Amino acid sequence: MVSIQSKWRYLFMFLGVQLVVMALLSREGYQKRVTYFIRIFRKSDGSGRNLSASGSDVYANLSALARAPPSSEVMTYCPQTSPYIRGPIHVSFPSGLTLAQVQRKNPLVVRGGRYRPPGCESRHRTAIIIPHRNREHHLKFLLYYLHPFLQRQQLNYGIYIVHQAGNYTFNRAKLMNVGFREAMREEDWDCLFFHDVDLIPEDDRNTYVCDANPKHAAIAMDKFFYKLPYNLYFGGVSALTPLHYLKMNGFPNNYWGWGGEDDDIGVRVSLGGMHITRPSVKFGRYKMIKHKLDKGNDINPKRFNMLSKTRQSWKLDGMNTAEYEIVSRQYLPLYTNITVNIGTEAGLHVPPEAAQPAPVDPAKPDQEPLVNS
Ligand code: UDH
Ligand code: NGS
Image 1 (tube, rainbow, N blue to C red):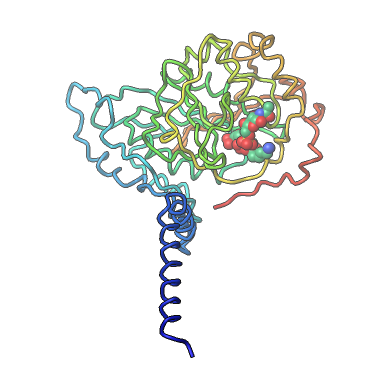
Image 2 (image 1 turned 90 degrees about the horizontal axis):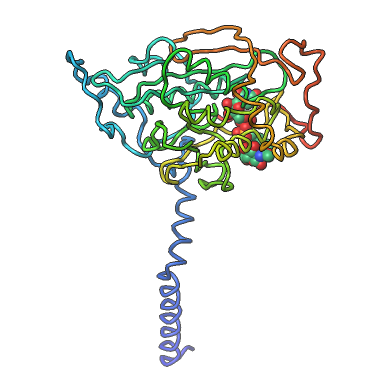
């Protein structure tokens, strides 16, 4: 038999335990942990959409742009800040997306992937340069997001894909030199964005215009937990004016394979008497389409040695020595496709079978690209 006295004792003990639990729950640290777990559960709704990444549909207000009043005789400049900017963008990668769909969703984009705001004169002329080979699946998603993103910013823009011909080792920086020269041949662009094909901007306040100094735009990528991986990082997406580009003698031509070329470009910024600027971590957010190292883009074993010599080499290798041959130039509905022969490490006219590509890294035997959609 339990006496009335001991019943009270149990009741007080029970209330005491509850009090302790409540005190713990109300502590800030605990609340944070609870919120963290709630977020994990909210991440997946079963449809595959990432609900933790809030943000609006990048096409939400595009019809308003198309309805902008027709230009009067004298075009006035667009406002300093575009009224169509909305902030965070929801980014996901639905399967089955086609280029024809992207084209239909962007009726104001014309031949070669060009656009001008319909109702006003843009204050900025921006060329997007995308080094490319064998990443059509990524390109489709980038175009899907980039076109409306740039239109929201009321830019006069053009998108250039610089496609490396052949199977020889990939050379990202040299393709950008080609993109710079070929884009400038066509139009007096005042800003060039050098843009990896697999990076999708997640906030349209990250404006695609140039700063007084070279700008590193991809400051916060999801793969680096939305933080800069290291202070001098200049990879992914960067923006330079033609003057910046020439001051640093463009980009190096001799980084064949993966790694180091972006660090070399970062060093060139300071060697050219400039410094790197960046948008805020809140705006410069990017989602990367996941993949592995590509076939033909093995890790460059010479990169550290080359990086140690940038100070001596930058004036001898760059825009002033970029040798290439344009294979074709196609003005497609959503972009200008420039296919280029950039040669091999042995030179422009040495047949690829005679030139030896960089050896495969034994630590990376699996070179098959893997794409998530
Ligand atoms: N690119 C291509 N085709 C290729 C290789 C590269 O189009 O075959 C372009 C593309 O625009 C890409 C960019 O070059 O976004 C940069 O190449 P990358 O995506 O391979 O480099 P990133 O550093 O990713 O972004 C590499 C992932 C594996 C790194 C392993 C080494 N630690
Ligand atoms: C550095 C590379 C950069 C590269 C960065 C991020 O180590 O080219 O990592 O790489 N520099 C050298 O190798 C010298 S990532 O995590 O994106 O694969 O961009």
